[in-house]
Structure formats: C-alpha cells, structure tokens
Length: 283
Image 1 (cartoon, one colour):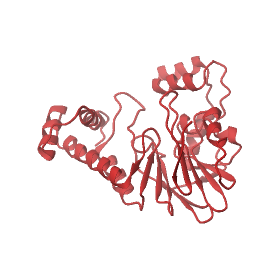
Image 2 (tube, helix red, strand yellow; image 1 turned 60 degrees about the vertical axis):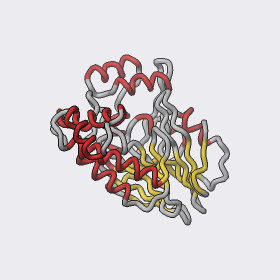
Image 3 (cartoon, rainbow, N blue to C red; image 1 turned 90 degrees about the horizontal axis):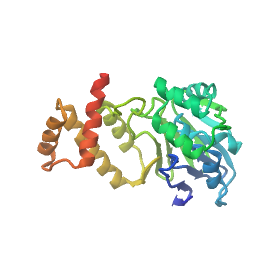
Image 4 (cartoon, one colour; image 1 turned 120 degrees about the vertical axis):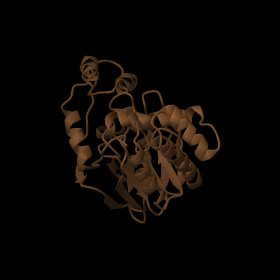
C-alpha cells in the first residue's frame, strides 16, 4: 500500500481498482488521531495501521457512508465507529445479510446488490466462507458533527450526492483538506447508472465554499484547489448542456455552443449520466 503525507498532520492511502479499495485517511491532532473510513477488509485497513506513522493514538473511525468497501475492515481495528443516523441504519441492514457467493448472487438477481460489488467482494474476500463483520456505530449523529483532535478540527458534514443519501465529507479545518468519500460519484443502485443535474450543482457549490486547499476523493487521484475548481467547472458546464437538451445529440450541440469545443469521450459519458437521471424522474 502506498501512503502519502498530504500536509503536516494528514495522510492518505492510494485507491486500488482491484477489489475496489478506496482511499483511507488519517488526521493526526496533538492529542489523538482519526481514521477516515474503515477499509473494505481487515487486510486493507491493516496495511495502513501497520505503517508505523508518527501519530498520536487512534481514537475512532469516521465513516463517510455505508457502502461495504468503506466499512468491512472497521471491526478488525477495535476502534469505535462514528457514523450518521442513516449510515447506521444501513449498517444494521447489512448486519442481517449472509455473504456467501450464493447469498450475494441472490441479492444481485433481486436488485438489492450490485454486480460490481459482487465482483469486487470476490476479489477482496476470496473463498465462500467469509467472516465479514459489519460494524455497529458507537457514536451516531443526525446531520453533522465536529471532533476536536487537539489543535485539529474534523467536521463531518452532510452533502447532497446521487451516490448515497448518507454521504458525508470530512473537513480537516486547520489543514484545509477535505476527504470526499464517494460523494462525487454517480448513483450505481440500478442500471443505467446516473447523476442528476440539480444534486451535482448543489454538491459542487457546497464543496467549493469550503476553506480547502486539498480535496481527496475515495476512488481516484486528489485535487489541489485549482484542480478541483477546474473539475467542478467542467461538471457544471456539462450539467447545463444536459439540462437544456432532450437527448445526447442535443446536449453535445449545446455543450459545443457553451464552450466552443466538441465534447470529449469522457464528456459524452458524463452527459449520458445526466440524461440517464431523467429515466427515473430526476433532474
């Protein structure tokens, strides 16, 4: 596992596509340290915790949302888990599930589990006798919460996201860093996957308003402030093009009119995601 020091008191791991390992973060105050997300397995989170970083004692895990790849390693750490009320509700549901190949496949067929998750659980948890322990939150909060780590403030803030209704970001105030969890990503609960224009605009507006020099997504590379501003501008331009068109061809024409250039393949994919949201009555 590659571990990087982002600022004097913040570290993060690289995401890994195989097994869908997300970024894990560590915020180290003068008195205590906070683990940001619990990893997708004991092996995943264990690599970070065994790195021997020069930090004060770890006191808790803050979950950014409920998905398996962010919490299946949490129990193995022995640390208390901090989660919002909606995250704990979803964790409770997951604690009632079986994790054999047959059980997961049955949920995929019923539409309550993604094929994408089935594939990656099989990579990270090979074999059929999986001893998966879904955590129980020891500290549950309603909306946001502020943690004092000793000279370093961690704010767990609710954001609107298509990816999951319980998405939180972790703003490390004095270090001007934000761990985004999966908040930037589209809804994958059913196909075709989608992102909505309205939620994306509100999300990006809220994130740009934070006093931050660094933005750390869970499954791709980090942004400095200027890089995140450029990303947000692109996503917003694409949202205006998709929001003003009835189909992909119309969205492409509008995007070209707005920007003076033809959309790239990546741009076309995002335009399609915005347009997919209309199939579910979302704007």
